[in-house]
Image: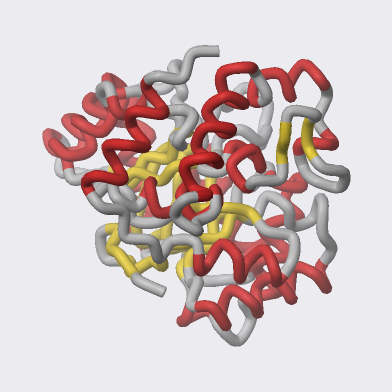
Length: 312
């Protein structure tokens, strides 16, 4: 396992998304998944206060007991109702959220504390001031944001600089072989302000694992549990055609779609880690070894050609 930096944090190139904890898997299997992560060198765990209505944080907190100094814990806040009348970026919400997350995680600090979505009702300066206080108090080491567009990210960085506040070190947005929107503007802002980019849906909820064909997802997978309306957002004709052509291209290289999904993302210098969920030790192992392919310039160009010229 290789490691990259987020500010003062050193994180594994493959991280674990913990949204399955407390929903699809119980504490026993959570502990098994966590142990497999340690065995494979994964040290980066990303959760949120809304995952499992707090159960994800609680189960992760149980799993990391005795290993706290070995792991990097990231969580998110801002979607869960704390009190009527408060919105996600409200300073009071920020302070209450961190204390509740610390309690559920049973830890004295959070390595990366991220606002889950922008809050248009609260000035960014007020949110950043509250987060800066948490860093100063030692409750949080680094801060980040999620679902910010380029303008919001640029504005937040300017506010932090002008007010001498702790800046966002990360932004967590959707990005994958099938969803490349951040390339147009967000990456430019990241590079201008030294912000690292954490992609969510890197495997498009299983579509880029090789387990989904023209007839739909395999049984007992996440996509198989989704309502048709949401499924159609992923399993559209364009995405299925791209997957088909990438799969054919990979056959001649003895590589898998999973390997390409991880390794392609990690060619971006803005990306320190690819966070993907897992419900078993076997999935952890598969994810951990998928990042080792060093794509050549020729291979990257061929992949880009497939992505850019596949019209259903």
